[in-house]
Length: 57
Image (cartoon, rainbow, N blue to C red):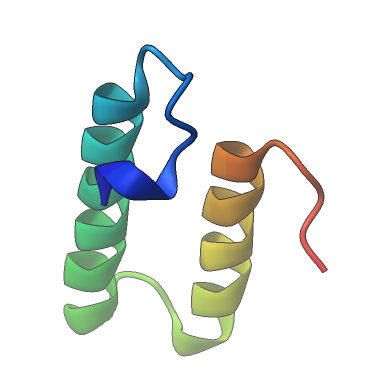
């Protein structure tokens, strides 16, 4: 997962941990129906946008 981030990013290990935690949290919330199915894609788009720093789409 760390290799997904630029090697010149001094905090890429931190970014990898936070990204993994967010994805895991979304999976747990989705599995327990706390995130409605119709909101799951929107949540993932938001997460990717925040990580990548670019608009999704």
